[in-house]
Length: 354
Image 1 (cartoon, helix red, strand yellow):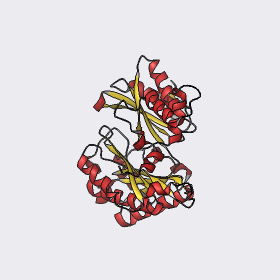
Image 2 (image 1 turned 90 degrees about the horizontal axis):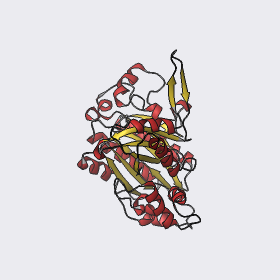
Image 3 (image 1 turned 45 degrees about the horizontal axis):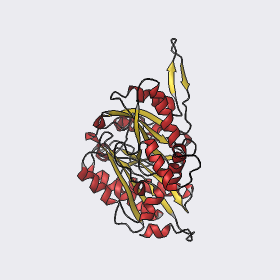
Image 4 (image 1 turned 60 degrees about the horizontal axis):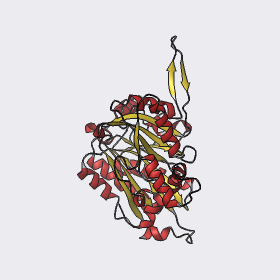
């Protein structure tokens, strides 16, 4: 119950940070449990969520608590992943560069972004020094502006990492070995950084080939798409939504597709705007959406904002607005959505570990 006490508004000295390791195993429940359990049992830290995805072959782990405790939990998760995942045997729909693909720190309460930058750099160095693993820094912790985006550092994925290390260049790891070895072959690399709260949000599309989903992803993401003229000239057309990364993928286990998005600032592009934009695009091509999916935890404010779009005008009751968001966005289409476990503030206040 320590985090419930930490959230007491009268305790202004409280520091709470979130860490969201994404590791490359989403099908073997035994391995998922081993890695998730490695982040438990640390005083001052709590595992809030464990979300495996068999199509992506990936699990999103959410940890929150006191900064030093969360750092230790993240290190243990990365260490356990290095012992239990072999990237030479891994495949999945989602891009990834290592056994733990990405591990961001997020300030929640009494913690600055600079604090999270320091934590991420400490973790990156600890992982490289003690585990001999290649680590990249991204987001607010990036060592240069061209290394801020995860998608840039992950380009080519795990399969291109050996060539990147051999050839050198601007996107070598910040820490860790600079040559291909057995550890790197097995683990790959991990991208560690600091960012504001990001909402990983997927819109379900009622098709199996992901044709409309891929088109919608290219239209809504901020970077847009690259067009080539008949004479070979290229031009980039910006996307519809600011602060959004997105792509279309098949979800074979459910016989549907998804537009998988990272809402990098949900105050700029809220969930309901992303949902309605994708819905409008695929509907124009005779395809329906079938709800949506949140990966990881979401701030209460984001659910309330979406709920205001779907609820009756003038409603200010948080519980009603949250219910309206769940129904309007179809968040319970693929699996049940428990707001007490999936909303950050409510999960922290519950005092129950996932």
